[in-house]
Length: 274
Image (cartoon, rainbow, N blue to C red; front, side, top):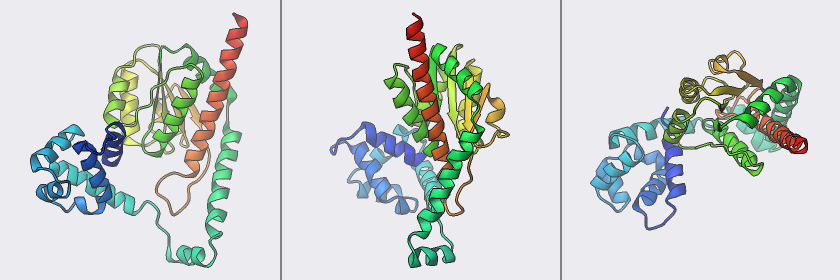
């Protein structure tokens, strides 16, 4: 699915200027995301103190064909986010009576996810992945939604160790990045379910370019894992009241930390051999 909210956030990130009309339009849409799907182009233009023509140009700026596309994807996003965290009546009553109920549910899930990931950890595979990353001419990390935040965390850590890694947030930039990989590249894909259409699409692009594929997932039998040269499995189950991954994200981050520290070890060993 086209990540319209991610695209709007990314645009704001690179155009942070209160006088930039595209920044202002993106900000206004996010502030009124529950209303935009029912607006006409003239209404949104009025809300943004601009013209319908500028709104149309803005849509093209974020790789949409028309304002109708913008409304469609905003409507999809709004429906999804309305179910982002949804408690049953009994759960609402439990939290109201005792707020401690919530951390008592969430923390054990995250702890179990990391504990199970530790049990599943295959250091032989980790070492192979580290060797591949160390020797790679290009390294790219990919994910969607919260998994992409994990990918960005990994990017920062590896760059601080002297290994250049890309990890774009914008979907189109991710596609361009995957299409620019070459033989000798390593592409690392983060996906708790392994069934994200976006991540699987990016993986196919990277495979066509001859990159080695590393998949970090909770589902070894997933569509994504079946494409991999190396699979690193994480553990955990999710809460019943959240759409987005909580424990899975924590498990993915624990693998990033293992890869990061093992890469640092590899660098030091290689330096001492020189």
